[in-house]
Amino acid sequence: RVQLKQYDQRIKEIRRAMNHFWDLLADVPGLQAHRVNEADNNTMAGWYAPHGLYKPDELGGLSITRFAEAVRAEGSQCAAGINKPLHIHPLLTEADVYGHDRPTRIAHAHRDLIHEQGSLPVSEKIGTLSYGIPWFKHYRPEIIAEHANAFRKVAENYTALLADDPGNPPDLASWPSLHTV
Figure 1 (tube, rainbow, N blue to C red):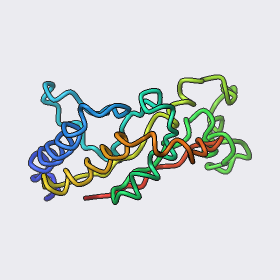
Figure 2 (cartoon, rainbow, N blue to C red):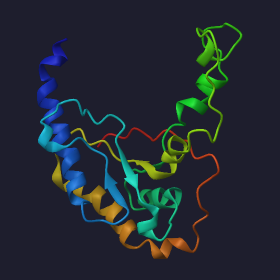
Figure 3 (cartoon, one colour):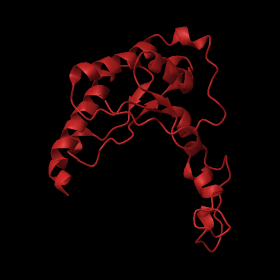
């Protein structure tokens, strides 16, 4: 509870830092900020496990996997994809969390409302259109700019990456690394 006294101040600094990162990338093709509207004055955006939205068509079809790899080579943190959608996640479709000899999703249900892979294509595609970004907990403009420049450099030089782009793996579902900067 003692830490809650610092909550508003800390959220304000995180929000300032994360918005600065996205402001530095506002004009970069292929990258779209995933953030709360600043005008809302909402403190609910703690930015835990922040992501960006990827637009491969603006970068010649470069896969998110190759994009993330190149950003990491530039010294920043970037993880391709996000966790599997819940309707196909093994934790709900295979695991028996409650020990009832049936998958978690139906452990306390009267019927199975299963959604097979392919039944929710928008949810399933989001993993190839998202990427994890560094989590800036402090407003340090020089450090934030270094990371933003890595993303910018890769996006601006995407054509050099297309030749050896293996594409995304068939099952792109990795939880992004939760890096703090």
